[in-house]
Length: 106
Ligand code: FES
Image 1 (cartoon, rainbow, N blue to C red):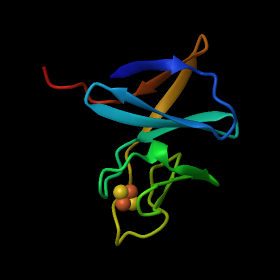
Image 2 (cartoon, protein in one colour):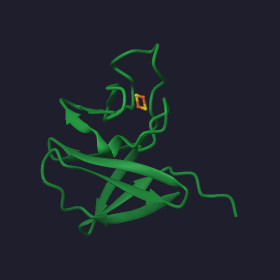
Image 3 (cartoon, helix red, strand yellow):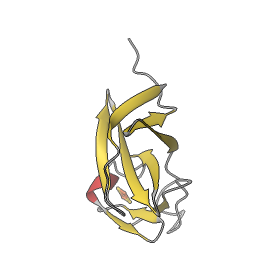
Image 4 (cartoon, helix red, strand yellow):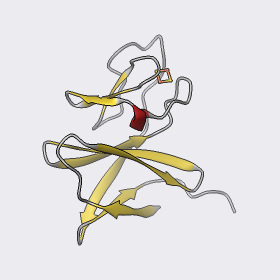
């Protein structure tokens, strides 16, 4: 499913969280490119959008696990949690779209 999120007007290294139905995605702009991950951390459900950008990663605010913003790969410790789901982001007419979100059940 393709979902429009909002204006593609981020500053470099800025990130924002978006709620999409029952889901949440965190979008960041790194090196001029937009990236998105599932915003709910798969460890204990904290919102990654409340964390920080470090290098090419987003760092969870709760237990400091870093996830690669391109792939969602956990680069800190596999003992803590799994990888995070990554989504493709596109920009069209100045608007951000996220691809691949599962629609909510009716
Ligand atoms: S909730 Fe994100 S690392 Fe624990």
